[in-house]
Length: 286
Image (cartoon, rainbow, N blue to C red):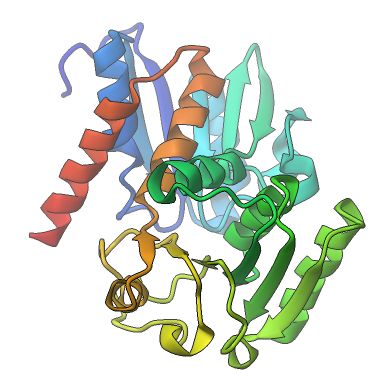
């Protein structure tokens, strides 16, 4: 048993399938401890067919808040009483607050991504040309946040063109004046963006890169939202080309920081959370 657990301990967690690899418990529990908050954060493996039962049961048992990861970010929407921020537009929620029987959702992925972009790469997307790889849930939040931040041009490249086109149309509906285009991955070489963002899972332990970075002609920086391994094949290519680069640890950290504030109203210790993430990653590498 963790020290300090008692009948007044508040419960938080992350619901996903699978959740074996999540680093969120380490990050949030370190923050709770640093602030002297009597709370614990736990990973809950919840298969898709059990989401409704799991949410109802955990909320009935006193769960105070939770995160959603794959594959629940969209499926949670019908179970919520309210949605804040851009989560409704994005069609995905990654953070839920439970208070007085009411479930309020938000999405911290987009803002967490922008904070990471500025902190880890010193990159402001306003007026820039950006290439985004992927058109899934993570890409959706990133695309909306980049356009909201004033990106001059956003090209969305995906293995399946129809999915990229659907995301482009969604973005145009919200940002009618935006310059947004859909591409296949084969059309990415020669696009010469200021920034390339990989929002796919390619590189997560499979030893592959989503494309040949040298052929793309990236001008400044690469951000890969994958964070295990710490250096993906794509980031290794970026390093060899002399580009600024960052993995997904910063985005995970910043979205977790925002989620913590959403639940508790307290300012979490960012350095403590970062150290906990780095320890967790180091343990995996060894």
